Image (cartoon, rainbow, N blue to C red; front, side, top):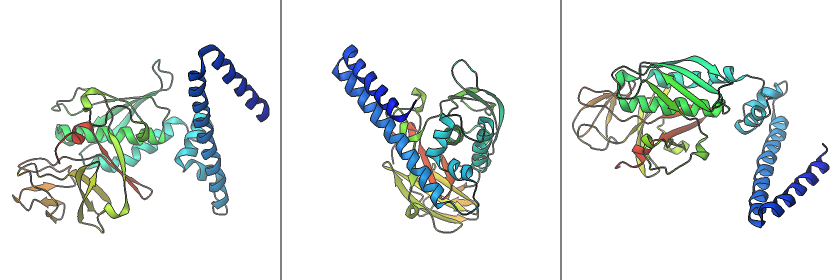
Length: 303
């Protein structure tokens, strides 16, 4: 159907909807059409910009799939050069360094694209910081975000193999979401099913150089950022022993020492210490962008 014919057909359908459901339904439909036009218009504009600025000899599909919006459009219309399983594998590869800091790893146990409730990914999680609840939650959110970004057609993720001593159930249902579309009240609890909210950190918020620390405020909560060689970590800025801020804490190798009570915590091992456990915050660092997630229980907690 030619472009002019398509436009005329859309107009006729909108008129028919107005006659059947009234002017309010027509207004809603008009807004929907505008949103779709903006969405596809931005996708086309990015496609043109990306191809014009691509280096000589670059693979056009590789250039386009590197852009999140254009990649999503290609997936939506079954034009992406990589299948779902390949993109899921790439997503998990991105989070494995983070999972390693929580003494865990993840593997694909199955991918059912024909599931009755929608495409479902089955994962098997090993480890997760000896059953620490906060570590399990951060691993959960990080996996969810990575898969949702690269394989958004996956509607459900089931994760099995949580540490036996964890108070979490043996099987977790993770509902992938795009961070800008996260439903519900951001201060609602995780137990109620609301997803975490993801936030992008500006360059000024990040520690400069390796083995450096810094604090930054996100959504009214203060976070401690620690940069070790090859990896950035985020924790709630609160010592679990004396409740003091960790901003003045010293860093000795991978051990963070609280300035208030001298308690030590292993940054590389998800913040474990002999006297307590730091509260880790999900963090994804890729392509020069750093994003952190604040689950509902942290958003609703004290500073």
